[in-house]
Image (cartoon, rainbow, N blue to C red; front, side, top):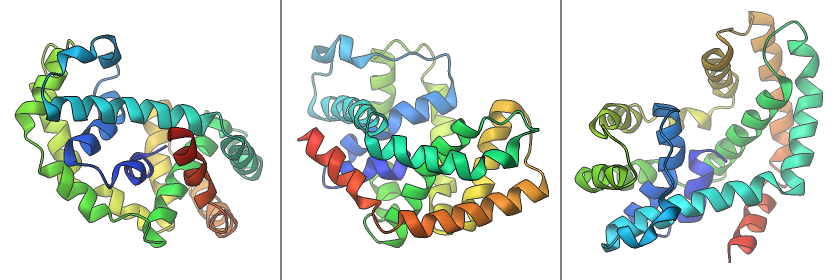
Length: 222
């Protein structure tokens, strides 16, 4: 799941839990060589706030596990892959990868427009956290230069690009940026236009039952 979908499960908890649930993806996006395994020594997190970050991190991993093993994920990813497959026949882009990410971004989009979450509160909660505790958490997980993460983290909080997912037309743009990072290949104009049309149509279908995956994950978490 993407950032706002993870936030859906933590929005009633404190800011450090929300920070913790964001960190696995933030760390991976910042530096793929960083390998954090806080579950190896939970006893280290001996303050309430540090332990909340740890709990958020662990719940992120559990949410992703339940989501990716669900019938919903398998079914919807296959449907999107089938719908977009021919667009990328002569491209390095893998249709399954694109369908996987597209589904996650569409879920974020629907949570916003259906008012299941408030992105403004998400960023406000993150910005309320004491950055010294964030750095300490990274240090305790073996990160040698945690200060380098702060520039990336500040940019994430300042740009607030998750707001852009409110508009369905921005999903294809975001997917193009992600695929460029992976394959150094931009979508053609035709691919972008047709992908946007396909995702807009699929979004209408998804909007009728998308919340059931959040109910399913919540049930499994409890």
